[in-house]
Length: 450
Image (cartoon, rainbow, N blue to C red; front, side, top):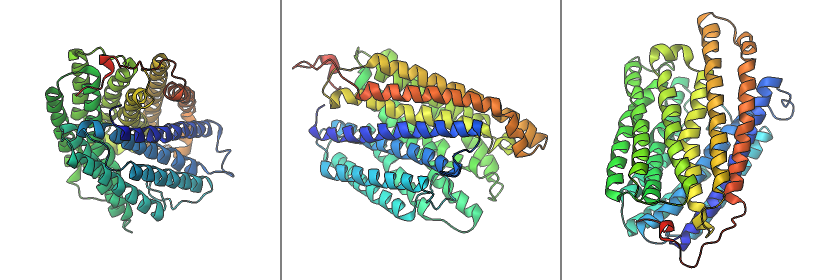
């Protein structure tokens, strides 16, 4: 660790790890309910548990992004963070807000109505305040220090995340207009500006782990960012097919959302090319595994599974089915969950001042969790295919079709058990005992690269 203010990231990763386990555990409870019936309804309704599951996901991913930024920005800018105290204040505000929101869901208090954006207005405003604190901190740090392509792209993604979140405060009465602007938050986050954050963090990891020249990696970075913005912005149109917007969104959405697979494919080629060309035998093999796995799973989950049902003629039958759930689970896991786990795996040995530790456990957690998510994805994909045929083509009622999907839900539940096991293994690998301390002079291979 080069700069003392990077220690801020330690606590962001700690809270993110805790919420990660909570999110997966609640998801497992939801899987049980799908199979056994809503036996928790009197205590906590299914819809409130689902809000807890999805909101915990969003919050811990954001905490991971913030921690990653607080770790890499000082190294890239070659100076200390502008204000570590503000960073800790931001973490306290976010953590308290998240706990109050989750507590509200569990005690049946939530405005509801807007999926993923169910938070009360005062929590949304608190999030805006936290975002302003964060953006001030990292932006001033970058402006006063060295400017690199990584920090430029990262700031563009982070500022975009904050700006598009402001549309969550606008809730028009017209349902079509409401859904249109709702997608300006949801889609333009996960299929727009978050891809910029993903690309910049991956570029940072490739420089540090592989030792490939910064100039080569920056050229790849700009290409990926161009593809992501070109396809992602107008690709929002594939959410406008059936919500009452003009018909021209069907060809626009179909064409540009089909191109959204390109930046994810470019990330796969980029990561594996950099690993192949790498001159440095970095000792943190687990971090490299998570980074490479991130690009592959993101390509299939966000790219291939998204492309499978993005064209209007297909989406007409598949939207809102278990095919959407299959795409969502693999896409979020591949693109953003694995990204956060990769940067945590790389950074924590420096933050704890140790050699890379518990790597075997981390790599086993990679294979267990990733295999389970893939199994879950296939189960939900086949469930969606049955659902489309019986419900959308043959006209059977929703509840009748659900009975035919029980086997697939049982398969998803089994996969969920292994996801939780893998998550717990990862958390132990990250926070468990680190037996080997760094020597007084770190090995050259461990020194963070330029």
